[in-house]
Image 1 (cartoon, rainbow, N blue to C red):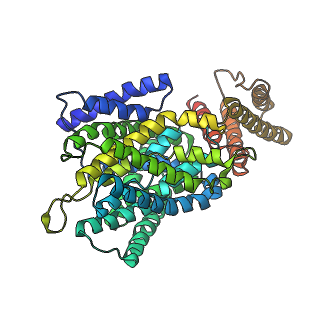
Image 2: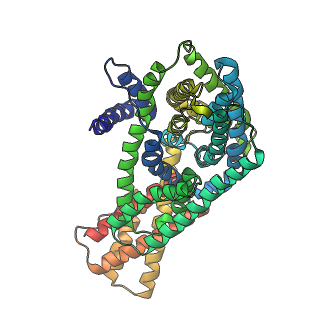
Length: 515
C-alpha cells in the first residue's frame, strides 16, 4: 500500500512540476530532480528504496522503446560512423578517465573506481530524449545525440560487468578474450533478438485492424523484447532499442490512421507517467544514500563535481573531430556543433539502476568496500548533469547558432503542405480527364484543394459528404501520404515535419470516417 501511495504522489508531483516547467519554459526532467531533492530533504519524509530490478524491468523498456521509435532511420544512415565511434571509443575513454580520477580524488579501491567509471561512461537515452524534445536542433545533430545514447549501452554494460567481477574478486584479472566474448553475446545477441521481435510484431500488426489490440501490442512489445533477451542472457536494453528503431522506421506502414493516433495518445501518457517517476527518483534517493555514507566522506559534492567535469572534457575531446560529419550547413563551425553534442550528453536513470545492482558483498561474504560512496557519486553526477546541463542546454544551443528558427520550421512545413496539395490536385485533374467520377464531386474536391493552396487552410467542404466524395477524399489522402514519404525519402523535409504532417493527415482521415 505504501508503494502505491509513493507512485501516486510522484504522479501528482510530476503533473504540478510539468505544468510550471512548461509555463517557465524549462526542462521538466531538471525540475523533477530538484523537486525530488526538495521533498526528500523535508524532515520526516521516509527514505525511498526502489529495487534496481523494478527500474530495469518496469520503467526502462517502454521509455527506451519510445525514444528509439523517435529516431530517424534516414538521418541515422548519415551519422552511423560517428555514432559507432562514440559508442565504443568515448565509452572506454570516459570509463578510464572517471576510474583514474576516482582513485585520485575519492580514495576508492581501484576495482570500485572502475566500476564507477563503467557506470557513468554512457549517456542516458531516456534523459537525452526527454531534454532533446524541447530543442529545435538540425536533424543530424539531434540523431547523433540520441543514437549515441541509445547504442552505447552494450559497451558500457560489458565494462560494468567486467569491472564488478574484478571488484568482487578483490584483485582478479581481466580476461580480454572473455570480455570480448561477453560483449558479442550481450550486444550481438540483444540486437538479433530485437530484430526478431520486431519482425514477429510486424507480421502480427499486418494482420490486425483492432485499435485496442494494436495498442496492447505496442505496450507489450518493449517488455517482450527485454524479457526474451534477458532470459537468453543477452542485453535486454539493446534488444528493446533495436526493436524500437526497426519498428519506428516502417511501423507507420503497418497500421491505419485510427490505430496510429490511438497508439500515439496512449504512449504519450505512458511516457509522461514513467518519466515523471524516473526523474523524481533521482532526487528522492540522493539524501537517503548520503545518510548511509561512512564517516569521512564529506567531500562527496566536490568529488562528484570533479567527475562530472571529467566526463564533459572527455566527451568534448571525442566529439570535436567527429562533428564535421554532421555539420548541418557549411557555415556551422565544428566547435559549435561539438559544444552542443557535448552538453547534451546528460546522465540519467540507467547509471543509477546499474549502480544499485552492484553486489553488497565480495568474495568471502565481506561487505564490498566503497559501494555506498559509488552510489552517492553516481546519483550526484546524474543530478548534476540533469540540473546543470539540462537547465542551460537551451542557452547553449541558442548561443551556438544551430537552433532552427521558428520561421524556418514554419516555412518548411508550409512548403511541404503546398507540395501535398499540388500532388492531390494533380491527381484530381487526372480523374476529371478520365470522367471516372461525377463532375460535382470532382469540382468540390478541386475547390477545397485550391483553397488550401491559396490560403494555407482547409476549404469549406460543408457538413455532409456523400459516399463518392468521401471515397475521393480518401483517395486524395493516399496520394498525399505517398507524396509525404517521397519528400522525406529525398531529404526535402525533416523528420519532425514528416511526423507533424502525418499526424494531420491521419486526423483528416479519421474525420472523414466519422462523417
